[in-house]
Amino acid sequence: MPWNKSRHLFRKGVSRGRCVPDGRRNGHQTFTCCPAFRRSARANRDTGRGGIRSVPGFREHITGSTIVGIGYGAAAWYVGEVPPLTCLLGTGLCSVAGMLPDLDSGPGIPMRESVAFAAAVTPVMLLPRLEQFGLPTEAVILVCGAIYLAIRFGVTYLLKEFAVHRGMFHSIPAAAIAGFTAFLVFAAQEPMHRYFVASAVVLGFLTHLILDEIWSVKMGMFGPKIKKSFGTAVKFLGNEAWANIVTYLLVIILGALAANDAAVTEQLSVVRQQVEQASRQYPATPGLQPVYRR
Image (cartoon, rainbow, N blue to C red; front, side):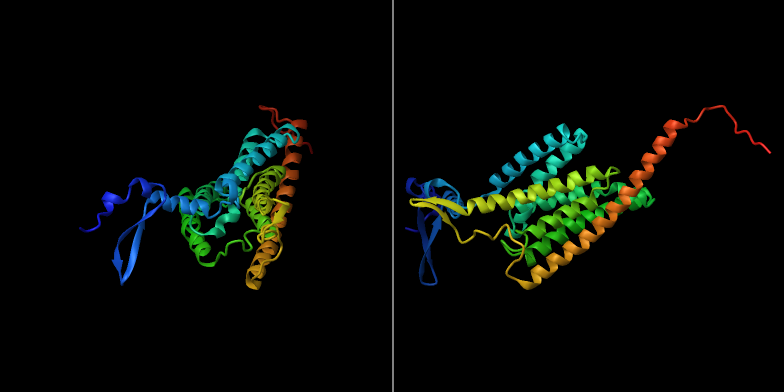
């Protein structure tokens, strides 16, 4: 009697995580595992004794960065007098930045959600800069669409081809790159608002790295034990020379652009404050004509 997989896949024994034979292939016995077993196997790869995960997953990272972002936004609003909307933006970016280091982990939730979020938000944050160039509406729409496609598909392709897990994405220079990028993309008139948003991204990024290092220390019978992965998250150099060179080149280039942009923003802010102060001191009176004397 031939083996019927649909009949036996979800037997009592199979549903508990067992595999059943489904025939012979190339002279070898083959087996089929139920979906519950495959899911449990993937979940148990990163789980240690007692059901505690040996590495922080997506849930731990997004929860940690969200909590830190809420605290940072509340402190900026209460102490630094940052506008509530800017605080909410910084909180959201800090939360999302907690997924950024895991872009090197291959296709999965961090890569899919982070790239999709960046592709959607980046064109919106660049709108003030595009308006400064005096582009027509059609050109602005085309540029925003090109940016979306470049991030959504171009960045995804580069990550899949060249990113290495626990490489330079898990490093302090990568956090600096994320902060410089956020500073350049967020074109606010107030310099302090830009600094706040950029630092929120860096804070969320560092939260991910710190959680990875915390999970690298596990409690054993005779005290804490250090795993081999300890030190692979919070680092300044990786194992591959080309990755280190590219990373630090990006840090230098983006840092120089951010410094130049910050200087321009500071000058414009000073000029704007002077104009506002002059307008308050010398208000224009309607109906009066200038008097010319010889």
